[in-house]
Length: 231
Image 1 (cartoon, rainbow, N blue to C red):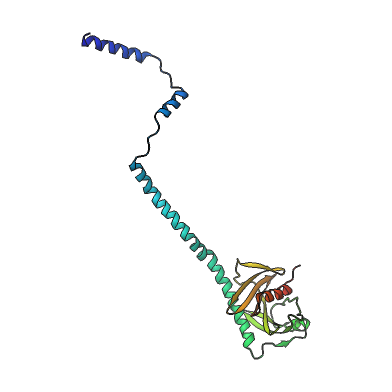
Image 2: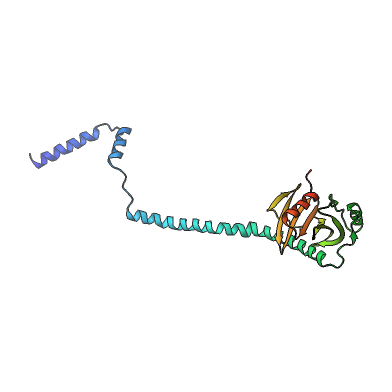
């Protein structure tokens, strides 16, 4: 067979094949072809490119996990603790003034109905004190003091050999803590211990209360429950 004749035959076959109709491969055929030729595994260079992306991402995630608690403390918890610390420090200082004063009481107790009217005209608010004292926590008397920048009613209770100061003041305008409150009696109170004294702070209506002493926390809570009974 000559070379020219062979070329003519190949050209004729190619033309005939080109004129045949074309049909798309069936789904079954495509599935078999995919199974026969699996996807190539990533090359070493592909893994290196992936690592260039993954390593910084993992490092950033680890850094975020470390910094998140610090940010929460500085932006959320620390300012709240500072609010509470300022009020607690003021309450403790006022209690210490009662302890070291030569005459801490301006009116001696003949009962709450004698002490409470004494404050009339001496304060710009009426102190609400529902507990008149009992054998466990006798009311000893009262005086006018200050809490931060405002006048306060100071009532002094006793418990065995301990002195307990109750400060009653206007609550508006003070920067109260937003977290850390616990239920005591009928109110939510903030409890803190500092400089050897236990302190309870709470609000009721438009008045604020601070109860301070070196008694055990349980005894202070018991008195607070009498001062702020549930409804």
